[in-house]
Image 1 (cartoon, helix red, strand yellow):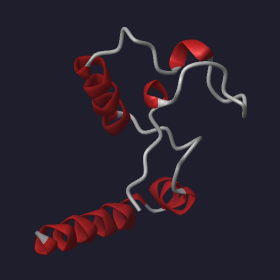
Image 2 (spheres, rainbow, N blue to C red; image 1 turned 120 degrees about the vertical axis):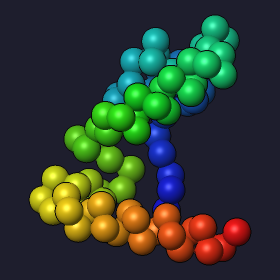
Image 3 (cartoon, helix red, strand yellow; image 1 turned 180 degrees about the horizontal axis):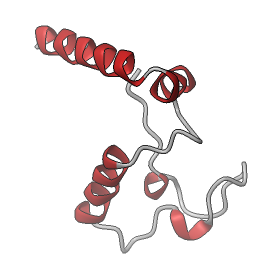
Image 4 (cartoon, rainbow, N blue to C red; image 1 turned 90 degrees about the horizontal axis):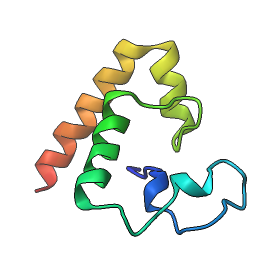
Length: 82
């Protein structure tokens, strides 16, 4: 569905679920640059151990060629919507 989890965008303070350190969450020192670097890092090295989309992560690990094919289909479909 396109949801992503970027810790530095989460509200400041402790994570009630215990997954993130307070230092990984939003701080006033973050800039557009640090947020974009975080997004680039996520795209370059996805964390399939804590996925927002469990089914996609499973396919990423078990059948990468099919994962790439499905992603390409989604991209083409979204381009047709514009």
